[in-house]
Length: 163
Image (tube, rainbow, N blue to C red; front, side):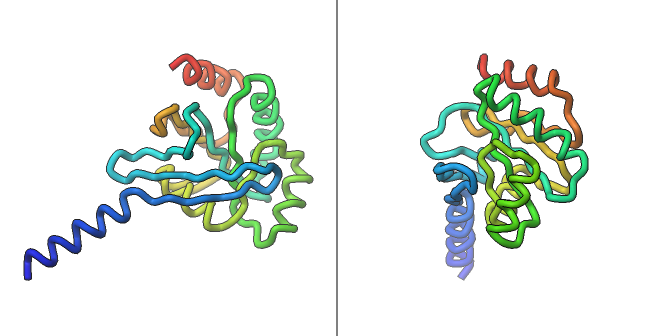
């Protein structure tokens, strides 16, 4: 009996340790297949071997309105991959309106499933804005909470692109 319980526990750990989730962005033709490994604590994007950052925000976040233009600039200037994760949009139309109103030029994930999965995989998001940087191996490199100045973000991007 103990052997069976141990076997089922081990099987459950294996199944939960390598969760895969595919998400389509709202404002691009890109699909992201995220692979989270709970043992290694890595969050990889399938077939994507460069550093990236997740930007968590909500519609009503005042500070996010200031951060978005900075991220739009860095996305273009530094050729760094940011993915915006919108929490709280109830419909596709609402998410489209938010993206347009905020002039968001980053790839945007808006579904609740994406927001929940990526929040948990990033160690929990308990306020916004939050920018989570990952290296090319999917290791969480650094998490910025609140308004982050452009020069700090540029330095982080430079350090990740040199690795």
